[in-house]
Image (cartoon, rainbow, N blue to C red):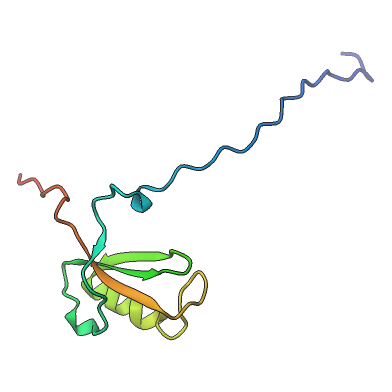
Length: 105
């Protein structure tokens, strides 16, 4: 082993960052879209159904089942969006009609 000799380091060419692909839930053909009118009365939210809280300013989206969405909405409604602070949050039901049916054993 010789001291003082430097290894030749081959430089890799600089690559431009590749454009990130669009997430599935933002694509036009995404089957599980929020549908219907805006829900303003959280007593309309049913357990076992999927709902979405969405901020149209920064596109933050939280999806969960009935009771969980009620609890989450109550926690964040006064503070606003978790991403940008916007207080105009929209709650809608998510269309799950195209979801695969559970297989029976």
